[in-house]
Length: 360
Image (cartoon, rainbow, N blue to C red; front, top):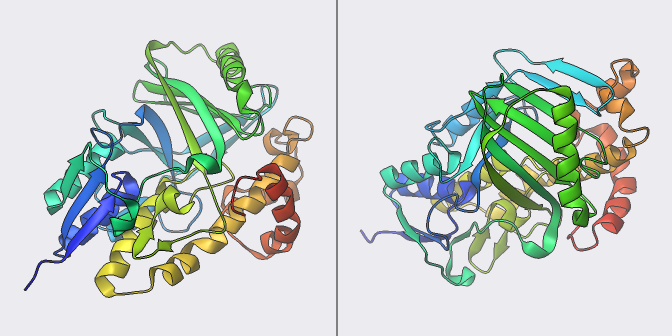
């Protein structure tokens, strides 16, 4: 029988997840990556594999998508969110932590290198430093679309003797309409600021973030390495062009609320592979799986910007009323429930004005 051949453009989490599943299904898979290695656009960044948007633990979900945890994946059970004046501490149970911290880039223990190893073991061919015309690819997993960026980040990763830490700073001087974060796990730290507007303030916001974290915590920074990134988003997602399936941020799949997109990227890569294997309608399946979540995070972006009043007091103060606390529960932000559906017609024109370059 003639071997079935698949070409994938891009060796990020979505592309490699697709490659793993297709190779295991007996396809001959070629993955074309323009950079010289998997994860090359990152430099050891710590990122969150979110575990709050669905009832299923994300690690169980990965297992169901034939992805093994052969990379550093540290659970965090506590979140401190502060605006510099007030703070709120939230605790999460052992069996369902808030998130898992993963490293990105060409560094030992990274998500990217772990998926690369799994793809190679499954039999996929990884062709680094090579590209193909997108119309020739069966799956396009090329990452963010430069003209559809909604957020930028800047920061450092470093070695430290400080304790494990998970702190979010919400303060427009430190991260305009976004957040800064200090993450430390097992002596490895990451300090970044994420802006959702006025990108020209990125350098100043980063310096302010460093100062504000240093004022409240006496952590040491050793061997710092700069990191940076961007995110793109759409609710008018194009999942297929010609015979090519689009996955991850190439399809506009991201989290407009906070930019936690790894889980969605992996799911989209798995879905594309499954649809190829089972001859299913990828556009229909992807729309059913992702459309509501995309709309939910857009609505939540609208609510988040309303929450900027009085320096995010409603988010950080333990004295905030119970209804407000429930409304700003993390799972609420990512599910298109009754309240979000009611808010959506108001939120959409607001967000479209804010981000005129996005397909919303």
